[in-house]
Picture 1 (cartoon, rainbow, N blue to C red):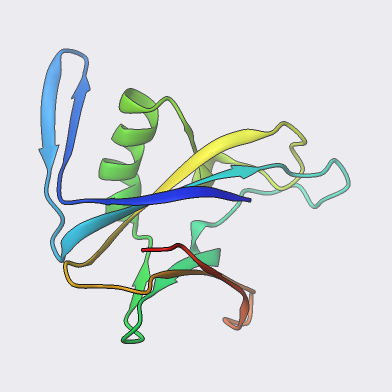
Picture 2 (spheres, rainbow, N blue to C red; picture 1 turned 180 degrees about the vertical axis):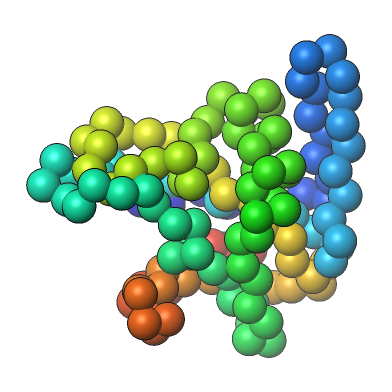
Length: 131
C-alpha cells in the first residue's frame, strides 16, 4: 500500500559520521513510501524492485536502478529514515514493513503515477502520486 510520496532536489545523508550529498542526474528525486506484507503461502523468494516504475504526464518512464539501490535508496532508508528496502523483502514474509523507493526523474515531470508491472511487462495497477 502506498502511504505517501514526495519530491526533493537533493538528499543529504549522514552515515557513520560522514555526510554524503546526492544530486539527481535528471533533476529531481521522487521518494515513494509504502507498506509491504507478504504471505506465508507465497512462493519463497525476494521481491524484485523492477515490478514498480514511474510514468509522468508526458509518458516518460522512470525505473528503479541498481545504482539508486546501492546509493540513494539504501542510504536514505537505512541511515536517514530507518525504513526498509523492497529489494530486501521476501514474498513469503508476513511481517509488515515500512519501505521506500527513490526514483530519479526529470525536474519538470508532473502527473507522476506509480505503475505495478507483472512478469510479462504489462501494467496491472496505476496509482496517481499527486505529484
